[in-house]
Length: 312
Image (cartoon, rainbow, N blue to C red; front, side, top):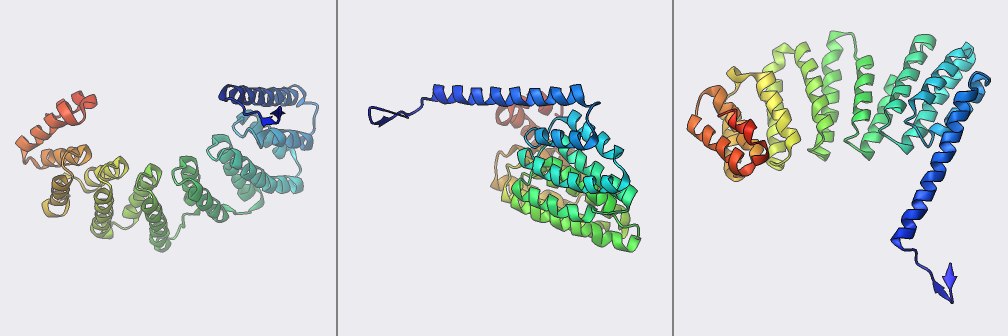
């Protein structure tokens, strides 16, 4: 719009008001459609319900009530149509994920569809879904909804043959390693790595020492790359105290590299805390341990003062 030949520039207040009007109109439309479905669902057939709920869910994928209605509608269909609509539902959920890739309801709906297709029609699509996960993790490698979905898929793809388990888990650990390499702060990747390493160790107890040594080198590489990143430190503590145990923690392999890192990155609270826990477990360097805890409490991380004092 122009006034006397000059373009009128909207002020921020006008822009905010326009956005508010747009949101209000979207909410009004959503509420009208939603109430119409709830009030008339007993009068509508399954096909109509599926069409109308899809129209809403594409823009509002978190409405679990509408997903419930869709599940009820699909189950009522005869087998031929049921299979067709279960396959279509995978396409619908994929469209909805474009609106919100972290929708609990949407990811759950995909799980439900896959289960129905497998149990009722012996159609196993779990392997195909791994590519979808890879795609969404490329968009956002920290999408924990997608990570949980991937874990769900792999649990169902896990081979029953003992001889196939090791390459299966090692393949997933390799994928996780590449993901961690992209972003060391990827808590989800570290978390699922711990779950799969647990499984691999259970099935390969004779390889335990080699696997844990290799894993420790991965963690050291991560903390030396970014000493301030807490995700790798959480994993390091899990590896040291839950997997190895204090008796198997080695002075040369585990403690000295962290002491050297402490010299390079003086005052890093994560490294100091890890060393304090190791020294306490090994009953050594007690004076230095107490000194570090006092530094952490008084100067470096005073917001957690009592946590550190409880360990002195």
